[in-house]
Image 1 (tube, helix red, strand yellow):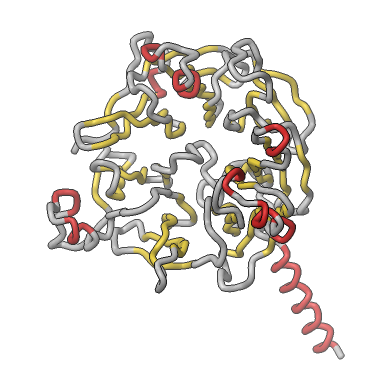
Image 2 (cartoon, one colour):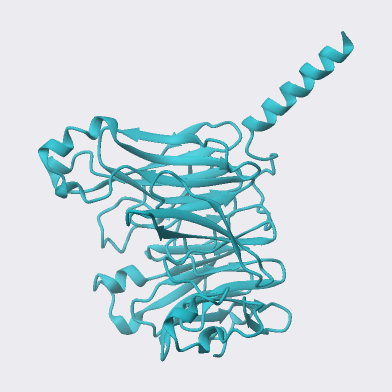
Length: 398
């Protein structure tokens, strides 16, 4: 009888573990297990471990590492006869373990790097693939081929979250006959256990009946922030709308809140900071702060800039979108740095036209700048924020 009870208890514990994505780590950031929210979710060019930065360099197509202690840069390929970025024959570029031919995405998780790409199927269709990349340059492994079209993914606390959509073209491109099928089409987010990627995923967000795409998934502690661009009222307004959820990974509770109008989100002092859905171009609006349960937490009196990144008590506000839409002159493209009380620490001109920012760490603010051989990564040294003449510098030489 005792043996039967023990077996039953063990089975219940296994089922309970399957229902939880990871142990509860609270709302503190943990580098090995957490999504690196402080890098850009649009331009996943860079990631970090405790000892290294990893990035796409050498013209933007070769995966490289830079040692934090010495600054030494290496191409992540251990083949002794490989020419890496110096290879001139296009077909031989694929021989290099560090070469990336398709979409660039990069995430660090528990000692390895992860990236997504698409490969051609037997009949010419594109098949999404997620790869695990070894940080010693020994190569990569195909770990998941989702059955749905992959548009974005993150790995956070034991779970791979992947967005999907049945809508593969813009809402205006569908005929009336095709729109009749919208009732059985949808979009949302799948959750795969990193311990068993072959197991069928769980749908944590599912919307049906109207056109939509998930354009953002970010992990902050025990909370996911998920944003969708929708066309629910497109025929009447000819405008897109958006919806946003805060999803608790431990309780599966979902809350909606007012979506930012194109603004990114930053995690500052245990709150999420963003610019709300005011009229675009209203440079007087203030940044909104909310708690992880979606309740209001006041405002932050900083200058309106839509690209926000934060880490370690420093908030970076980049005005790229304002320059892109001619609301700010090109020569005033800059990033401002604030402390967590909203006090301006410094403003640095970037001289990089409309190239995107890449994020912030404890040591640097990263951004792209056009170079002779493609886009290069530049960095601003945050230890020198007191310097009124502070400028960015190339993050590596090649």
